[in-house]
Length: 369
Image 1 (cartoon, rainbow, N blue to C red):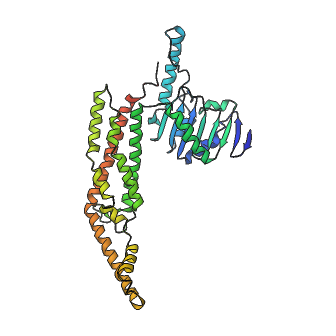
Image 2 (cartoon, one colour):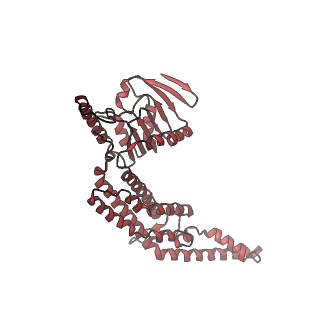
Image 3 (cartoon, rainbow, N blue to C red):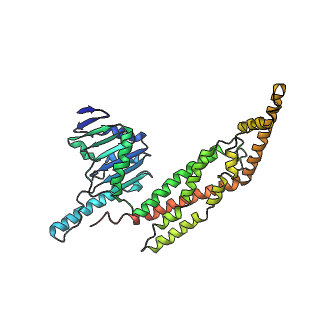
């Protein structure tokens, strides 16, 4: 059954999931947001969770854990409920383990939630159906909405509020550090790729060198500067994960921080700032410079039969100035690229650190049995 209204439609079904249109958009989505009361308990053929493993989207899912109680009494019934809750909690922790999904998968638990929402940045379902395969067996009803302005506001105002009241899968500070490292890893690999494509060339075969044609611009450098400032804060974010009990963790944490503290981030920032050699090279426009030379230095004589001569001279002067800037950065280019590669190595080590310790950092508040 479908009932239409302005901006979307009412949907109801039995024997199939009534949010299939949303699922179809998963493969193209950049953002996936899910709020559900439960997920399927079965450990085989879970089509819905498999769909989240086959996407590169930023996935955030919030679920309740049925049978989990605020407290359990030391009675026969209480102990039975404790046992049942522990079984469910372990199933949910196992099935939503981020290691089983892409790097952008973030699960949360909200023990008061009964809402159901499944969406991408393009389309959202709000209704009675859970993100559970068993929902296909029930009569469920809801609405499909494709109003992107509404969807963005829904995620920002509603989803974020629910998430902020939820338990993260990992210890909160460790989870923040994990996501911070993942974000930096993606950003700096993108920066590195762009540098190799738009600033360097390997035409000498023996090593990368500065290309004759530069395609890095001021906006690229502004983004890089901002990300370097974020990178500079990584030790501070790491400090928030200090473990009051586990000295082995703290020792490994300090060792990882030393790699980041040894990076020359300030030098890189200077290089891409206004007085830096890369900034001056990237923002130099030979055509604009030649026009300025012609206007400022030769306008009073560059007319009629002399115009072409003075125009050529202006182009030559601009080319010489570009060559000077090119040489200035070339003198620092090897160190610049080497420092960038040190950043990537440090981020690789940070990810390895997270992978090693995250099993011990599952949020202890989830399992209250």
